[in-house]
Length: 180
Image (cartoon, rainbow, N blue to C red; front, side, top):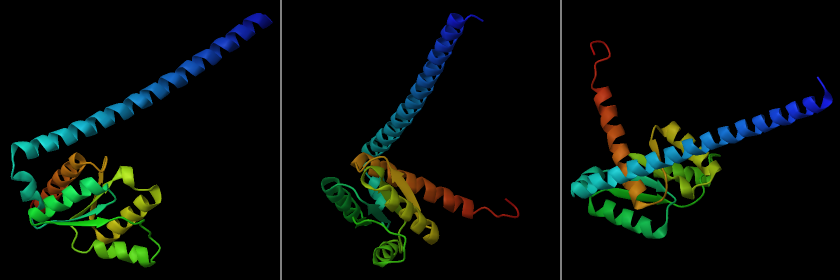
């Protein structure tokens, strides 16, 4: 094949490879956007459920103990007030979470006692603390629920999810392993 034709073929191959990479990146961005939209729709549905049934949130909070990691001062005050008014407990953890057996690790582990779930907004926690949180929860068999953000809507969606998980676990525990 003549040299100019080889060069043209090589340029064409490079352009095709670049187009393929751009296409793959666009598909990945689209998948992230779809996941984000699904998360927003889930939160909207949760808020709508609570708005339609004024007693639903109170019923889900009564007697429950949620450990909330991070968050924002204004929304945390609202969440604490809701929990308290409903007869639940909102335990807020602000500091970094360690999993090294030191004082901070022991302090966080103590918060998990009697916790129904740990709610963790992903916009206010560093990756190392998240890894430590997951390890603590796994060791103590406490459910942790990732929240999209530290918003009130994410909290409501998280509490609804904790309720569904708890209900499913109770139903599974009632099934006889031998007879079904």
